[in-house]
Length: 236
Image 1: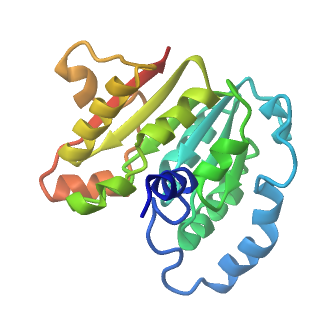
Image 2: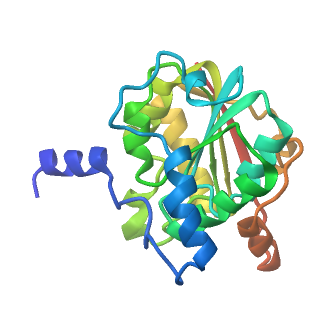
Image 3: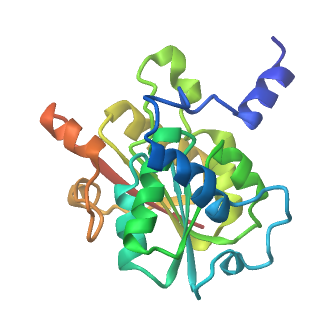
């Protein structure tokens, strides 16, 4: 395969960064939520992005925060509840996880959340430049086998996407319990040159983020004896 085709695949990235799209069958209430609630919350990439992303939300918001791959939605729902002045965009292609998130939105009456249920790179390319205050990539699929590392979401092309949409001084937060992925991310961000790692000592990256609610992936890692790293980078 030619380099051009390889580059196109990395840039397109559809189905490359996540595995299956659906697990066990949804319950009736979940099916209804996917059919009725999701269309109201889903960002429509067929329409041009607004000049200000605050226009996506029915409530006033002063900051915009993007979470890629929110899993069961524990972190996203927690942050949206504690920060009503922030507009949250959550991306998750896994149908069962999206159904769980919709239930959390309804239960919490969260009006500062918008969702996207497909490839995050499509959304990143749609977003205006310098429009996001923070990007969260928390416990992404580590693709642990070396032959699959090219499928990791942190890559040269995706860091360039992050750099484009983040405001100057905006932050990219990455958490993982997989040492090789932590080192991979540090190396890629250093190589990119547009992100400054904020850690000054070990406790800075071993300590969870303020008011961190934890995630089910983190709990599993601890049960299996793995510690986590919490990296914060500032977009320069």
